[in-house]
Image (tube, rainbow, N blue to C red):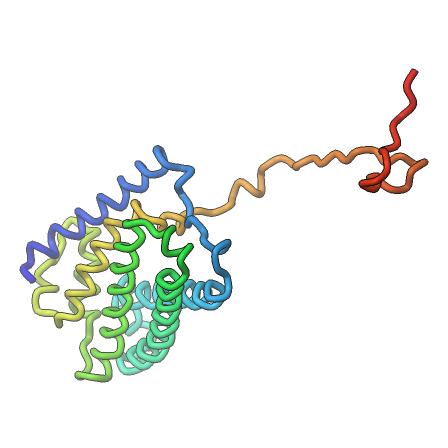
Amino acid sequence: MPATVWATLPYIAFTSFVLGHLWRYRSDQFGWTTRSSQIYESRLLRLGSPLFHFGMLGVIGGHVLGVLIPQSWTDAIGVSEQLYHVVAVSAGSVAGVAVIAGIGILLYRRLTVVAVRRATTTNDKLMYVLLASALVTGLLNTVGSNLLWGTYNYRETVSPWFRSIFTAHPQPELMVGTPWTFQAHGVIVLVLIGFWPYTRLVHMFSAPLGYFIRPYVVYRGKPIDTANKRKYARAWQSPVLPPTR
């Protein structure tokens, strides 16, 4: 892909990401939710949801280590390139397989359970396609570029390009000669980032912080008549009423 794509698409995506979340929070706070479908089906959800979410933690951690942290930093603390790739392949493969298995189960559940399928919006369908595509191409990069077709050091091209986006001197030319799997992964992830605020993925930025500062909820029960040990009379009995004057 031409350098102009890598020079413009990131800024479009991140602008949509920031402004979209602000708009969504101001105009649709009641829709700031995952729209849980647990009431419709829970067996597959109990299996797929932990796999997906815990796998995503590993995937995000791997991206922080491989994309945001420069190679010079890991070299400075004695982590060789060979050791880095061993850790990246082993940990990245485990996290990638877990998250793909999780989203596979969730997609199967959403397609086969009628009530869940009916609750799926058009935005949800597009979001699932983008998310699954990003995960598959990401795992293909992890396994393919290290095991299937030789070793590709993306920390010399992809990582500096991504970090340069947040500086005054972006370097889009670094992405031009990268393998097609990395380019496909980059485009899909950027489109997903731009589409993020308009999907259920906004719940990632929700935290029940108000729980710690909200006032206590006071419950008041009805006084129990000591003369009548039962709080409620049986259906065939008249309730015991207090005497009237």
